Image 1: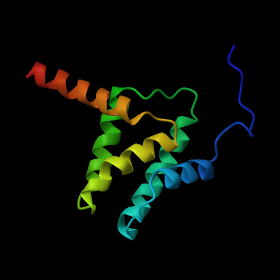
Image 2: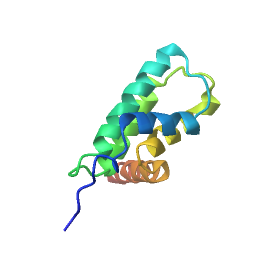
Image 3: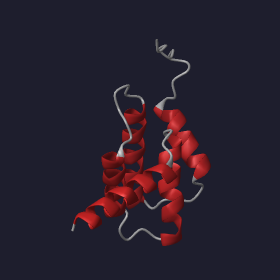
Image 4: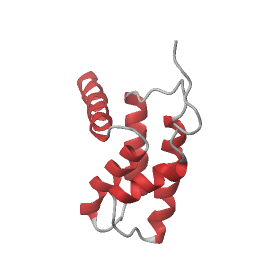
Length: 112
């Protein structure tokens, strides 16, 4: 039987934001700060849903949304750290997400 976490054991959105800012110490321009904050909150909320599974479809969608909303972000060298920090701060493994996304693209490429 799965035991429920008490409120004191569950990470809050503030905890996730703190973890993000510790992991990503760079200044984010206002245009991208709002998008980053929204993604951070959504990932936090998803990570607390019992039924949610970070499957390949989720991975592909997350990467597509991230890439679409960060077009033009400068400096480009920060994008990997930004994505990784967003994922990790909510308990997702960015390496696993990227691998799942790659698998989906390989499957689609092989079907064509």
